Image (cartoon, rainbow, N blue to C red; front, side, top):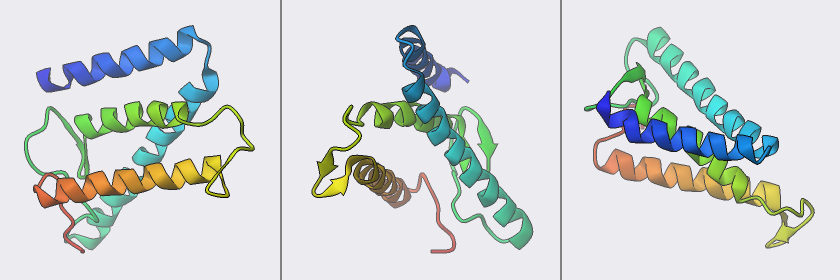
Amino acid sequence: MARSGPSLATEDSEDTEEIEARNWNVLLGGLAFWGMDWFNETWNSLFFHFTQYAPAWGAPGKTAYLILIGLNIEISFMFAIAGIAFCKMLPKDKHLKIFAIPNRLFIAVATAAFCVFVEVLLNLVGALTWDWA
């Protein structure tokens, strides 16, 4: 598990900073983002279980720890850190518009698109598989 050590230290550092600042909205937003990843990984595993063919996506290759068929410890830490980072990107003004779109909606769509872009890159190098695509 040595490979996940830096990820764990980074995640602990992010959480600690938000707790010290009593920035509960960012901390809980980050946990919600991480929780949605767990929700998606759970249905992906159930999809594999019931089809007995392949998951919607899989995480092949070397990992410090494979948690579910599409989730390893490195991906889990990445989503935990990304959730906090994405929440920190939100403007303080909740009514601000970006390209005439409410900022919360715009940033949610933009960061989701960024995550999909990263997954496409991971698929291209064989680090994430899509057998149903």
